[in-house]
Image 1 (cartoon, rainbow, N blue to C red):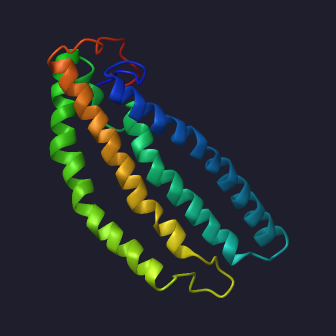
Image 2: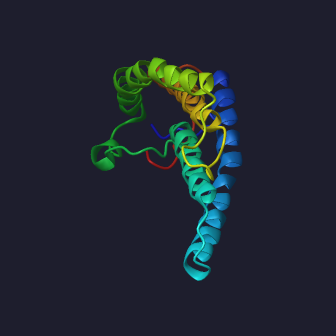
Length: 183
């Protein structure tokens, strides 16, 4: 759709602002990921001493970045789409496409996966899951807990996209604004 997060209905601005702030804060995990990878490479190849817990930490950091990157990209309208035709559509037609995609593709998938994610996390918490390797990270249940939390943020971002699309379609005041990247 291309509308920026500083325009549109108030509820959309609040949801988008929160997710954007969370995404900006969690983006720093990418720096921690790069540092962890560099240290692990130096330990493994220069000192011939890799650390299992550091390898697992890399997986965990990467997982959190991906999980919370999805709603962040939705809010910034930076998610993947076929822009070949999309860029030539009017704002109203883009809103219809966004509404359809969110209602028919995004929400059903997330809603279908959410119960499985909750069961997955509940099972992990119940057994106080940790790494199978003795030198691995404890508290694997903690990283798995990020899955349903990120799904909740995807649902919130989708809700914001739906409200914004409906507002554009019906020309609700406060929805006209500049279009951002990806429009």
